[in-house]
Image (cartoon, rainbow, N blue to C red; front, side, top):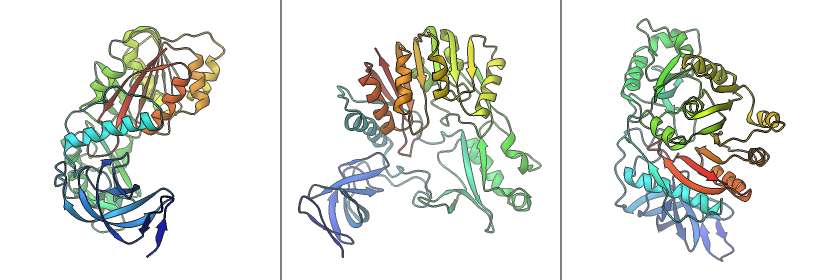
Length: 404
């Protein structure tokens, strides 16, 4: 066995077994335990679990381990409802009661804000939620064509091997029906000249036609109505997946906010921008993805909105263009990719002197980093709300508002 000597003069052996108690979950869904004040990260554990673990990896300041035996299970632990849980990589938290999942996700946000953002929080972060299952209105299935029968499902954890599934608990019922139809169409897929390795299923779309025209699956138009606005987009366009929380998300981001000018950066197909046009005299939005821009333009026309300008620029390019104009927005909505926003871009946003910034993020760590930049520029963190758009996974959407 390899013995690792930490600066605390603690000897921990790779391959050795130890008994520890899980303190909490960290972002990424691993349990945190401590051995002689050295951190251990252990997957598929629950706060309060007493477990026997084996040390598998040594890093600079921590170890990774895996469970050998659950000695005393936490009261928060449950039997995972899904029979594929130990194989499929889609969910990480099904072995935890849903109320405890919500507590953990509040902690993910709070820990990031305190540790990375250096914010002091006086109250717990509220996490809005709805049903914990049957919530996904779209999904991308992976197909392994080299096997017979075909393997249709999701990737296994930390792999590109397909976990074959017949039913998924987090999909809307209509998508599970489409999945069943797809599985029954294996001969057509196998004989198709198109080498499919993935297929998008979207609720409300006839994904699998009666004649099994597999080649047309990825080109169908999607329609969804939310708070009186009609959205059209292609299956490969980004659109929020939780059918139960779309209105909640819009109400938190926009709500009763109103004024003369609102900006929507990273606007996608116009999810926020089209709603903002109800409350603001003028809305300006920008998006770099050309397909999303095409559908955003289509959505503006379909909804007969005449106070929304939509640009096909990156946020960075648009900000450079606007720096030469004297615009003073009441509100800027930010919904960037998971990696967040570079500091230079954040400073350009601050230079516009918006009265309020609402930042929507799917990663609390990059959110906390970016909020610190905005706070150092004079903006005060006014409110933070979590929205559990992804039950049974460690992912959490966060909406933060800042004001001068």
